[in-house]
Image (cartoon, rainbow, N blue to C red; front, top):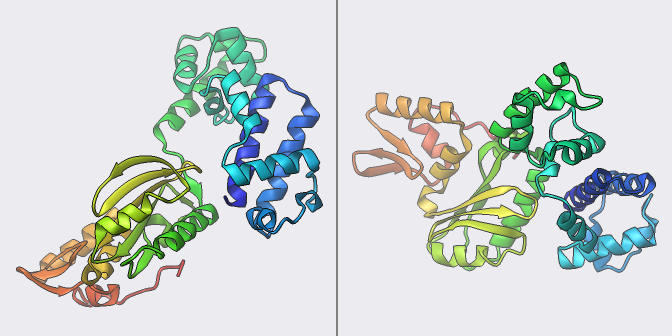
Length: 313
């Protein structure tokens, strides 16, 4: 469990308690601890493993240290799970709307029964929100506009957090029998500021063995799909991960294909077609003959492009 995961959990707890109207000092303590943990240069998980006292960190007392240790050792936080049982799960979605803090979320829930983004949009469209104290028609319109945008936009993860998640998963997969080359691809490898999901590539002659090893990864919260050469997972952090296994002779082509944006890949395929070639995630082909695929450099050479290292390597 990374520091970012711990901080995210404490912030979730603070938000739920704030919505409930819990003691402000207690809520502030969780938020302050989350901020300190996220910026701490050393992994708290390693500190716990070495029996180093967490109370030496700024803003973390004995009670909070015990809760963090519980979270690291078990992957669960009982006080958070109790809070989640007391409140509808959709209330935290409402706090994604910038105009809505914990107190306004509580007001919407208690006075209008709003407990999800869908219920929020419905109430705004019906003009019921502007009837509440502290809300006007302009605020209601702004809430509706943002709620509709959030409902359509998938959640994204900060680049540094995605890097850590990818590094941890790759380190796990490197231990699988038959794993050869491994790399992250997609928007993470392109160095986007935020990442929608992770793409991890593994070259191996035995996809089922790699996939079986993947399924034992302790950070998996949900398995969306599981196959012999591709699996889609959700981690405890909420990040979606696609893991693909390819033959080593196609690893470079797959890495190039799954790193490039859609527009880039379309342009590359056209350049290949203009040269009488076909390019895909398995390699560059002339008819049935594979001309390149093992490395990105040889793939690009076939369409007369230089290889430029991605900014994250």
